[in-house]
Length: 156
Image 1 (tube, rainbow, N blue to C red):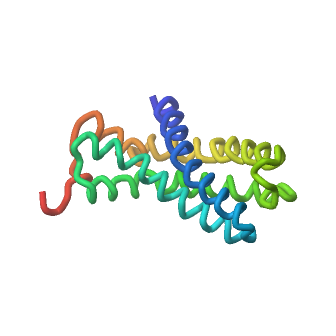
Image 2: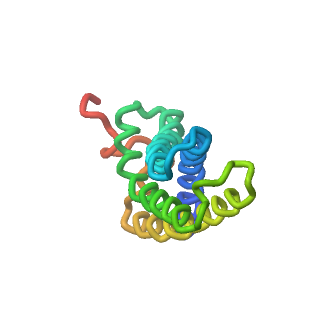
Image 3: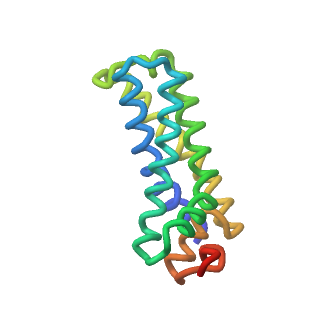
């Protein structure tokens, strides 16, 4: 069970992170920013989009915004952090990957490799968290069984 949930959690998190990452890299590359500035924007947007991808389904299941966001912060932060470190580290290690125009195949080969490495790094993080009842297990528990004590707002 942990393997399947960890696989799905990692794919879900990867999708959310990649959206922000790609927007940030596209903006930074288009504006001709230095790699560290582009990465900073990409990381910030990766967290924003990753959290948004996880918060939205909780809201659709009737959870209030602030309790949902608190739950997602607990559930997703380590996974997103692992992904952004792995992804951006690889992009920095590949000579010229951050300097390429988005139309250049080298950029996309580098980006594809970085996404694969991000998944490989984040999967064991998610698996370990789920095995301890943390990470995506928290959001999964809410989706399957309704509000948990952790997800309740102080005012409820």
